[in-house]
Length: 348
Ligand SMILES: *Cc1c(COP(=O)(O)O)cnc(C)c1O
Image 1 (cartoon, protein in one colour):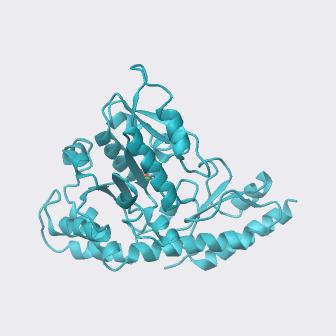
Image 2 (cartoon, helix red, strand yellow):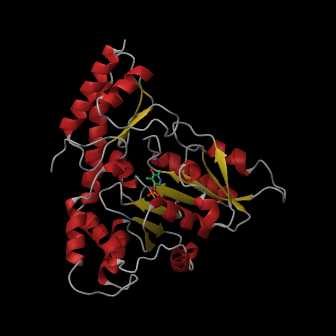
Image 3 (tube, rainbow, N blue to C red):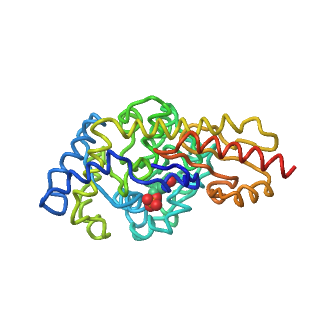
């Protein structure tokens, strides 16, 4: 496969990894039951229970917006609120879907430090008001890895979940890049989820190498009551479910999910190390997952675009965002780094 057209605008510019593709082909043999009653869907769910070392409830949705919104709506009544970070995907990039699917549960935005919520920020919002006029805080939602490529350490997760327990809040994790967080920390999925008090995890498949799909894992099984009805009502119950679930079998059975997350992370490290010494270029955050956020002079950014590079500057707090994918080629990373170096020097 040619890497000549690879871009760094988003990790979902990438295609489908061979393991997911091949599992879809295997699922494409004749007929099978519909709506998730097929063997692939139960195999995929079993793989998750094995990987997470626990008997969790597993559901599949088409994308992250639906997974997050439906998960949150199952943790909330309409008069409840969800505490999330100021740059949370659910706040800035889901078009109000969490509020819509929960019939009005309000998102309460907390300040973040390097993209991360803290117990103090959660406490400040949860304890601000106790009266009946304020939407009652019920859930904390955090993103692992964060929208700006940082990763919560286990002790940070534990401190947050302790705060949640103390305040009677459920804990939801947006894991669109959960694999990248596991890869960075070298910790097991269990250690970064239910063992640190996460009630519900939305585990991203798309950015990890699938065509489409997100898994929703309820470690607190009581919270999953009637969740299949929510999925159906929201248009998220795939009739040919096996094509949503089989790719998970492909990713999970031989460890491809981890291999690709490690690869994407290491490409981000490479990029960061290649541009770290360019004068006028500043890494905005520690590079921990698969994203590199860089402050670059505006004229140089323009020049970089005119050399054909695509990247976003609207995510999080500005700056240029470069995302690495499961298939990013090192050669392409080096080309990008060379071009960043030369446009910055040219425009000085
Ligand atoms: C990509 C992403 C999602 C999922 O987005 P969809 O486009 O709805 O699949 C969710 N959360 C975060 C942090 C993301 O980066």
